[in-house]
Length: 542
Image 1 (tube, helix red, strand yellow):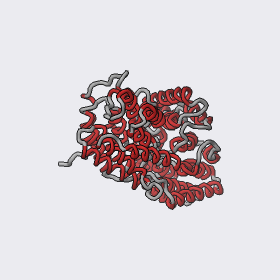
Image 2: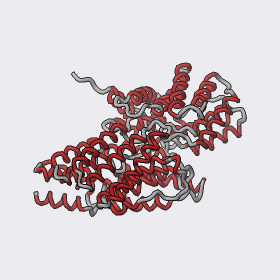
Image 3: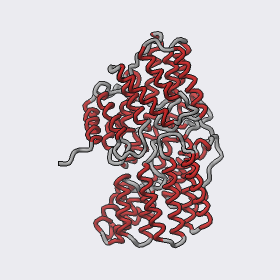
Image 4: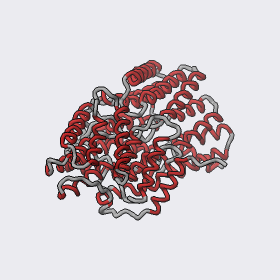
């Protein structure tokens, strides 16, 4: 008898606990669900817990302001400076910039100087200090692991401290080795979170980190209960409004994804009008990447174009971080490549905006891939060669001096580079070489997986392989590849359309009917794309 995957078992337990948990009190769930004991003066403790609640939803700027206010009202509150230090360490996004590292280290050192008034507080302070210690000598991964080990010591010394357990679970996810097929770290974090859920059903961090733990093909369904309630647990957080879309995207629930991201964008804009007028919230950019992706899967090109225009107008940001850099380049690349607008794809450039691209150079892979694919598909060999060379240089830079976080950006850009070389070979008539390179690109992309910030590749490498196979007249092989894409990314518009065409060409009319019907069910009357008209004609004739 086969044994159930342990991660699936934990997910089932978590889902059952979510269903059985009390429904959140929408008015008070965020703050009242977070209980974090500190020795600061009594009147600042409610504000302190609000700050911790915001930290759990990655509301780093808002949490920082609240912790700073706590410090202003209680100069001896060491844990206020612990909190400030924590806001500069965003474990699942990207490593701190040099400026963020300096600010975070200063806060951690200030907390250490004040010492904390209890053994527990000193343990927390030592943990954040472990992340910032020797930041000029040790890389991010090493320091993230040191922080996680220190948080495990906090949990061991204070087994009744549920906040420590929840933060420890996050630290496990933040220090997880990339490309672990056994999901060892995710499994461990999920176990901790499941145990805490039964005690704290309204806790925003539990729902949030559960989504991250199961943000993988084949596992996302397990986090759907958490996705459905998280925004209600933290209604004042744009990130909480957005985060369920990680699961909605994995499951092809495009309407729900769009609704969540609209709510995220609008709340982020409201906060900017209040606190930082004239700038765009990084969270709004992040939401709009997912929103554009969802509209494109529904064939809603005009809606996607409106998102693209919004992203393109943004010039200055509240926090010019990696999520901004990624969205700025990914959205136009998606818009061109998903719509097969090769001319636009070939002409995309990196915009001159308020971002230090040297910190986010990996994001430029989206632009270079679009340039390569667009140029090759137009038969512009010189343009394709230039884009291939640009990707090769970027991959070499990342491999030689990689971004410091846990994600393998060098590996991801290598997949893009291989795909770009594949399309250049395709354009030059080297068909077998093209298929070989695109196959290698697909394998590499799947080994690396997606970064937590992204809804998915700007154009999945395996879908590119399927496209090439179909155009080479190898329809049966193409159908296998398209269906593999749909297994990992249900509801991708072009994979559905491609699978239907490949099945029809291979003479598998039942499969063609199934995929065309899925395309019609998904897009309905929302699009004028040729694939939908083609589907209607095929189904009507059948």
